[in-house]
Image 1 (tube, rainbow, N blue to C red):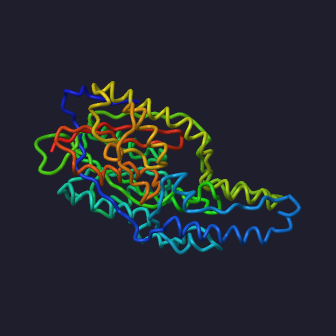
Image 2: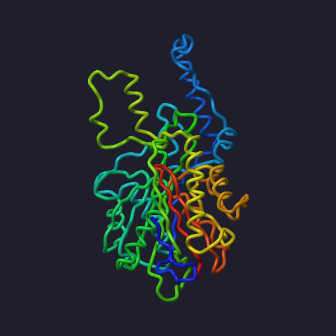
Image 3: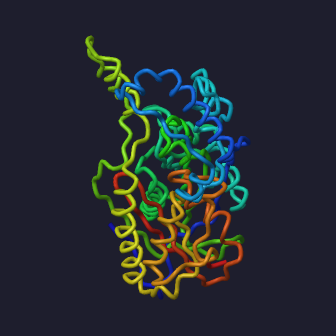
Length: 390
């Protein structure tokens, strides 16, 4: 799917504000690895007889150096630090709230949305609809977006959508369609508590994710903007089914257990409901897919790679981003051309590319062109070509 006006034409929709909510807690690689290694010692000691007999494999310790080399991550912001570092829990401790209270995802989104509204010099009355686009929705219904709409006092509509790490790009494309159908402005939010679906007992992935929320406001490109704005020159979306990134958690899980289920089966079933990936396969398949998609999109929109001043890529893995940028540019990208927030925020799924856009665009000049791109499970991928207009 693609939406791309000619490069010489004025786009009909623009981005006029972004917002960011960052949790107060942060966990360094050193802290996370210390907790993981303590768990490894406990596991290996408890299961020493089976390990000695060869019926169970001993767990291998990790290191901060291994984590940074494997991912480029140095730390991550989290909604709950204590529970993640507790080796008897190894997961965030987020208590259920009464139904009459604002949900955690809605609260995060409202904070990011208020930041975006302030940046755009807008009020809730100026917004017609809310899209909550993210990887991990807190519940099936009522929609988180409708709760956000209510909390902000927006008189309009809201709905949720999930396209994994590409959700922001898909959300922007959906917002464009709604505006072209008659809406004035759309608020698109990306709340992600990725630590809640992460297996902190798995050495290969326990370090990957962090928590955050971002927001983007889209409006009709009519008249002069009295604030910073970016016209959307084109969007492109692509999906290709793969099991190489998967999470089987869902409302049918309580129906799965058999009366005679073994402890091993239960252990697999529980692990099966957390984030799983075949990392090497993902890297090998996603990098060329996304690199080609962005390159083709740039050309089809009437530009060349040399016209692109900045790429705000999904912050999943440093090497992955570097390879994708190299495919697009035909050379190594500088940190200015492909900024990184992964080191501080870790992988925040759908929010990653928006964090990069939010934090690394102030130095660009009117007329400069850039690409926002998200990609991940599905596989799903999306690119948004934007041009600074004021």
